[in-house]
Length: 134
Image (cartoon, rainbow, N blue to C red; front, side, top):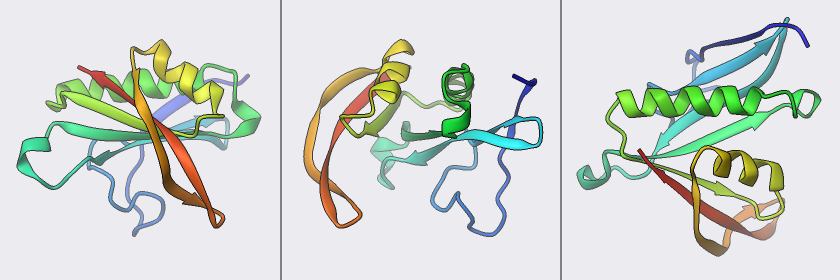
């Protein structure tokens, strides 16, 4: 695999990062291709939850299994801690074993299963709720 480059994902209008925080947006590039990205969203607008964020991560299937997810998640957790975040949470489809394993590798724990909370292609979906205290 070519050299992995992580860089700050800058906003271009609202493409791909609408509702995300101004910190904790990274894109992974391998050669000329975007291999994946990670971004943080606020959990709530309420002041009492100012230190709680949700992480979203995507790795292109052509680049999975090469440590890109680990590099992105490790970096965004470091940035989160520097920015005063105290809890990072993730919502992951139960069958996404790779994503569940990645998050657990970095100390996320399964809090529970939220039933029929998401809709994908017109179908109700459960998600696993994971969290990590920093």
